[in-house]
Amino acid sequence: MSSYRLFGAETSPYSLKVRSFLRYKGVDFEWIARSAETDEAFQAEASVPTLPLLLSPNRPASQDSTHILAALETDLSEPNVIPEDKALASLALVLEDYADEWLSKLMFFYRWGGKPDREDAGERTMEQLFQGNLPRAKKRTRDEIAKKMRGYLPLIGIEKKNEKVLKRSFETLFQHLETHLQAHKFLFGGRPSVADFAFSGQISQLLRDPTPAAWLSENAPAVVAWASAMDAPVADGPFATLDDLKTTLLPLFLEEVAMSYLPWAAANLTAAEAKSERMDASIGGQAFAQVTQQYAARSFRTVVKAVAASAATEASLTEFLEAAVMKDAFAA
Image 1: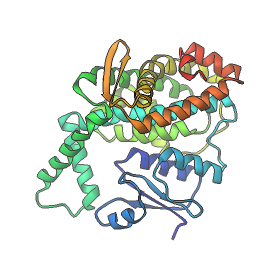
Image 2: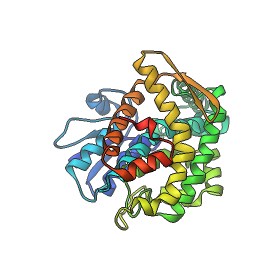
Image 3: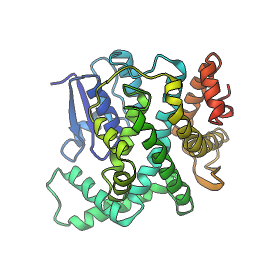
């Protein structure tokens, strides 16, 4: 038996984030697909009902993908995923949080928001849960799964009044990401960073759903190719310099990260600190409101502190944040 055991699902972006990371590190691990058959073993180790769950030889069981990657990077430093350049390392943290907390909204929106996609997703989820031994009432079971998942959407900000923001964000992100990945093999040069794994976990799901998959295939072929490579990535060289990346990386931050994720994350953090049940933000001139997300607030607070600490000593990071209109968001 492998010393690492990963409970996950092909339908879980965070599971695939961790699986890709383990493969990149060359770790021998056992992939245990979550299903009715494996649920008892999962429940015996899990503290929350969500995936992934990593069982490691020298650490407690963990279900937070960001913490899992950080711990594995400490234990297995090569091949490294943290750029030596502190400015790049800080920007990678920002993009990892963007993917985990904002890009995930876009994925859920396209997966469960429209009928063709949610029926397809319900079918795949049903097959995963029952491992091919499908119930006789397949259509009803599929529809019950889709209905249950749709019930979660308002909790993460997927509401009718927010759809215009989400659609604009999706197209802006992938227009800039396509341009960037046409010029660079990974987000920060010749090898994947923590941000690549976070992005690929979400994008792997978008490529499984008919509507976003069709759009990406037509408009972002470099993203599609990169996502395929990220299933089991291999380093192709060192991290690039910020100067080498800036031409295509800056527009991604300026026109998408600073326009969508930062206003939302800052407003969510403010609401969490005020113990408000809902948060309100203005994103690209559009109102965006939802239930306050406590975990996302804690995560963003950690990122702000880390980036502010680096910016205090790294002039190149400060200059980039200024150019991306993000300096105030990451002030100490």
